[in-house]
Length: 133
Image 1 (cartoon, rainbow, N blue to C red):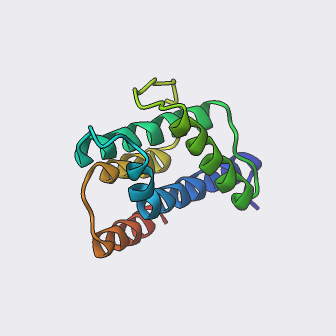
Image 2: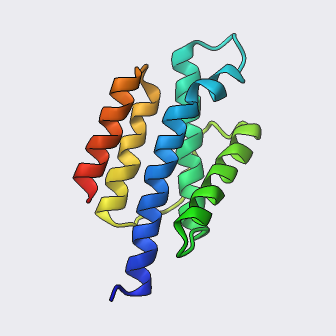
């Protein structure tokens, strides 16, 4: 039987994977909400920074629960709030207590800065699934 801490880590990792998938699928919608005075690359960078701020805040506040569905919904809502507030400048919160596996998942969010087609998005998620299981 897994300890509560290990189960929470597993839920956090699952939540972050779901969050990345969500952002890969909705990034263009969020990008379209930003001013046309920014290049597409800049808008992707803003979304990436906002996602990292969201992750930092989410982990720092320990907003995740044992239930993956609730944790996933919570991080989606937190991102939407941060995006509306235009929290694009990275405010680093100390999260050095996260596992290496969790950090690997967070590092994968850098793909949000790139222009990707559907096949590339699928490859990212498949690669993430195979490297973190």
